[in-house]
Length: 600
Image (cartoon, rainbow, N blue to C red; front, top):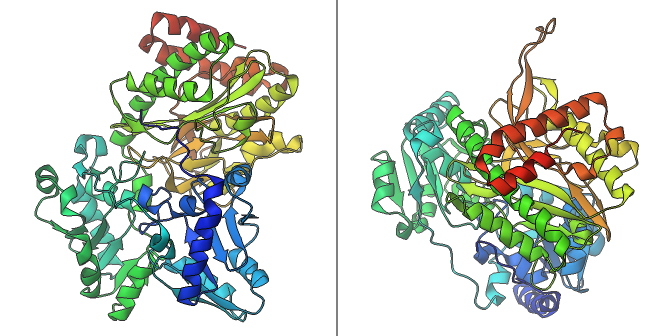
């Protein structure tokens, strides 16, 4: 199994660890210390060595941070994790609703007489610290960079990962890494910049057509890189990760150096140098400043071209979704045949689904730990089942299953909410509202230049009419055999990045009733030029092509709540599921699929 079901942290472990951290703070002369869920690469996903937030507090969500003061310790989480954090942390920690409550405001309230807050400059970006300093002006609260105090008190802290870095097939990437480097280097020259410093693992993986295994579920390497304006690149990675196949793939224009050479490499640069203040750790900009290297702040130049997939990447992703869709359909056929017999648990569900994906013979990993939430556990947006929380799948309840696979040709992410036996009318009404929002995004046609914030409301309108909503974005970007959460594209009210052809996103509205049930329906979609319509050629338009083909549970749909266009879309979608997936299934699963995709 890729997924384990062990509890990685427990609430009772937090208070003694917090006490030891406070002792270190006192010794260092600090009134507080910041503990983010971050590593030196500022990515969303971290290796076990960098799970400091979970180790200290017990909170295992994929976003958040703690501010430990001498008298209070706040754990800041967004709307996805507010149920989860209350279950995972002890009373010594205070959950704080973020971003509604800003860290600076909270610190000023907790430290009215001022104080000194320590932080690890490897784990915070320049922009983050810059904004915090500005927000704290006049408060008497100052920031001080420090060694990582959590590392001092963590016995048995895992070692840094040493996963092999391997070449990624150029026919799947759709472009050689030499061409990619030349393209980015040309942009540097046009901007008058001598080099760019790359710190994001997925940017480096994309640029060099390589993949790694340093982060669970995400095939990226821990490394840093400096790309010069002549397309030469220096890659800073542990030599133990770099075999002969990788060296041959990289060629003479890429120089391999060990991680400890990164600092001297930065200090030897001649500026101006491009650096992303939103993602590069503060430590990097400090090295440049100390050496007098001129910095031009600018976005990582790999982020946008990585998001706009090549034709080869889109074709690979489409095939990966058909393969994955067949595995999920085999699983759902099994689930319908099994759930009514009783005794089935959330762990059974997650394990069987992974088995079905493994049976494809192409699964490299799951793309994240499967969320299998039965009944009230479905209301925990990013629920991770453990042996301690494992719940029986009971008749009369909803089962929310959010999962995905990592295949060499693509990354998948799909959510289906399933009726186990007969469920109530209220659950069906809520499900149908969520479905209406998902269909609205799927059918959207919009002018080029619009961003995710312009479309997010489409998914929420039916819920808003009923006084309901959900506390997460409607969709995130997805990589091509890379991170399942990828920027800069998003379907979210805070996303300002214009959507462009080739961007892959999730479409996943939901609704969650704490203590009762959770609902989410998710397909992946890719942005494409919209076909022209009669009389509508006055501006360039875009729309979405659906990549995910798995039935939506018709037993939860109230047809009377759908308008004619919505019913037509759902019936057409199910017909395409049957046509594309049916030939890939076993005879038993094909029979299930025929019933599951019958027209409303």
